[in-house]
Amino acid sequence: MKSVKVSLAWQILIALVLGIILGAVLHNQAESREWLVNNILSPAGDIFIRLIKMIVVPIVISTLIVGIAGVGDTKKLGRIGLKTIIYFEVITTIAIVLGVTLANVFQPGQGIDMSALTAVDISKYERTTEQVQSGSHSLVATILSLIPSNVFASIAKGEMLPIIFFSVLFGLGLSSLPQDTKEPLLKVFKAVSESMFKVTHMIMRYAPIGVFGLISVTVANFGFASLLPLAKLVVLVYFAVAFFGLVVLGIVARICNLRIWTLIRILKEELILAYSTASSETVLPRIIEKMEAYGAPKSITSFVVPTGYSFNLDGSTLYQSIAAIFIAQLYGIELSLGQEIILVLTLMVTSKGIAGVPGVSFVVLLATLGSVGIPLEGLAFIAGVDRILDMARTALNVVGNALAVLVIAKWENQFDTKKSLAYEQEFLAGRVTPASQS
Image 1 (cartoon, rainbow, N blue to C red):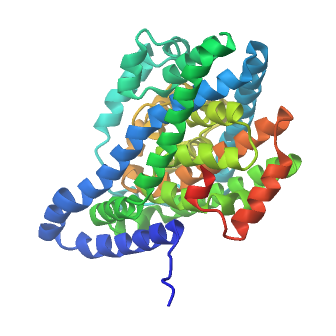
Image 2 (tube, one colour):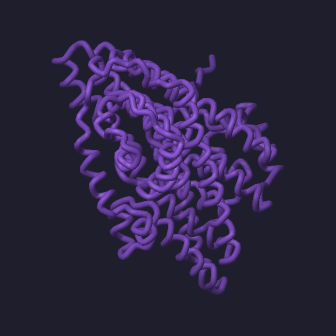
Image 3 (cartoon, helix red, strand yellow):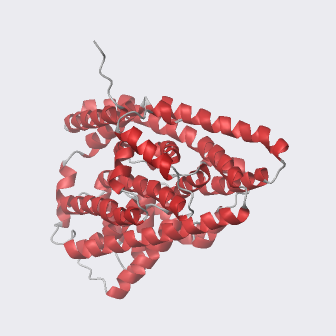
């Protein structure tokens, strides 16, 4: 009798459901909840996040250097970079405008009794925002921060943009060397890259346990009661995420002769994982791996995916625009068309200017709301459900970045259609496994 093999997607989904059930039970049991959360559940989730953070930097450095060395043309790389930034800016601007429009049409903040809302301490975000507004994360400072004064310090801190900048330059320098000189080092980076993807597959076996711990802690701390007063906001954000993912990104995919639903099916494991952990980093290595297997060249995949994690956060910018209008409605503030245009323009800048800051969505909002006279204190009322909203926007960020790779590959006429069709058929037939992708 053959044993039934449960796929990783199903393992994570089962862990997600069990974690929600356990969290709901623990929410009403204060004594046992505190011990279980602090000593078992929270460490179990933190172990998984730490394991992922451990491998992200080596994967980004090794894949970027190998990919850029493969391009070997500064003009070509510059063209890819310019197209990538243009695409990111257009798509995130559409996300902001869509969020503002939906918030104005459905008005999730109207008619809510503020006395029924629970305020959460947001002082830790306010401290970070003071740094942003003092100029340490201004647009000019962000451009300067691309260039690391000490690349090893940037690696230690996990600062992705300086790491990308250094890796691109190193890759270009390596590609300019004679073949016999660069080949040994190139082989080393290829070996590092392939080894790290193998390590990723090992870590993913722990993913269901990590998901179980993370989601149970979230539900145990907040319960479902905190969702009820803000149900309109939660429903609108989830609707906006689904609409943007299926319709807006669907149109972009159709223009490029791609199908968004096929991409979502291919990424189902990554989407469930990103959703349940509320962390895009958990799936970065697998997005690079899958998009390369799906027909995008290494030179584009290794550049677009890490860069997108700083500049192409579709779900985050969509949420930020909805949340800003929601808080204005909560306080009965009528924003003029001019104020909403200022809000859109400010979000366009601030959402790029502080990429990589912890609690980035909250920090962006705190740095933005004051520009149009919206009380910052309103964020304290939605902080309690931020984790639930973060899960949805993280999943959209993953889809947006995966599609971006394919769009840029198509734009550069480097997309391997035959490889894509073969992978699609293999995957949908259930014959693609993590081991066979590497």
